[in-house]
Length: 205
Image (cartoon, rainbow, N blue to C red):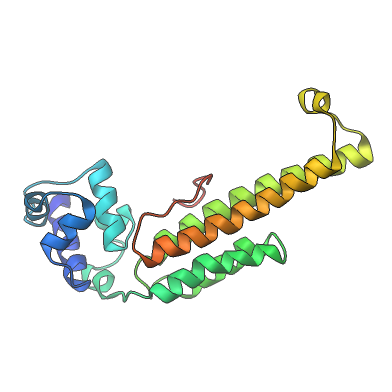
């Protein structure tokens, strides 16, 4: 049964991380009785409860529900906070060339995809945000290029007037926002907190 498999996954992953039931309950803001019932196969978590468990156990929700890896293999994945932080911070390579903010984290994710606990969650969050940011910056560069060379106008924006200084400030703001998001989430990762990448298209699920 799925609930039995999920119960075993939660227990194996919890013990592999050295967490007590009390500690996991405290971190997930669930009651101790709820954790005990889940591990006992007496209840099956859904929605937000399932997401909290997956987050603090360092896996994806699907890893708790599907037999993608054997329980022993998933539980054996070691934690490596330094590498996860490096994965986040590697996105800062967009400062040298925007596309690098996607390529470098992707390479780091692929290199350790089956060797580090929680890397799938972190990798998907980083890439979803960086790809979204790349789309936004590319569209804005395209708009500026079309205005300068082809005199392309969007009625509402054109009514505000095209201003080189304002456009430059907006681009700087986009770069600064990306830097702030990367640093904040690297810190959240180190402290085992929920990641906060906004906006982010859900391209990797």
